[in-house]
Length: 183
Image (tube, rainbow, N blue to C red; front, side, top):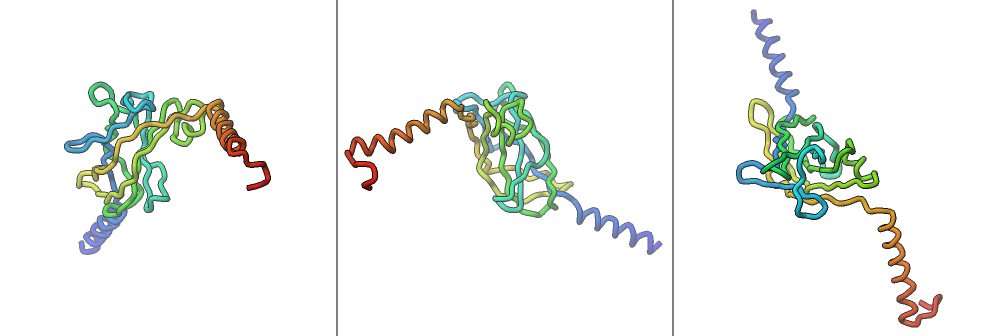
């Protein structure tokens, strides 16, 4: 009987030691609101046309995607994500850094949206959160600020920007009548 009780307590201790930490991936909860806007800064993201995902790491420089991408809410909750509990690969009690990233569909990942023509993406500030473990409620993401998406610049836009830089560089010399080679 003592052997059985010892094995049961050892199993319980092992399970507790390996318990993973959780966070509450909700961007609108009582007393806290963190909306996400499209590139115009006015239109709130809505539905499956946009995705959001948490990125987490033990340092602010080591963030990686955790959980699954989630769609945005619709109706009166446009601009908000309500994906619920996300399990992270660190035990409860660990302090981690978290950021929310959002992008437009049909891109499967934030990185794909950044690289694709017509991609739109954006990210929140990075916050630190102490993870909780079951049976306690998951940690809320208080302090996460709303943000707007950034459009992928077009090739034409980049060419115009480069041309303007060249004109500024060499046009300024001509306006100041500084001969080339005499700086």
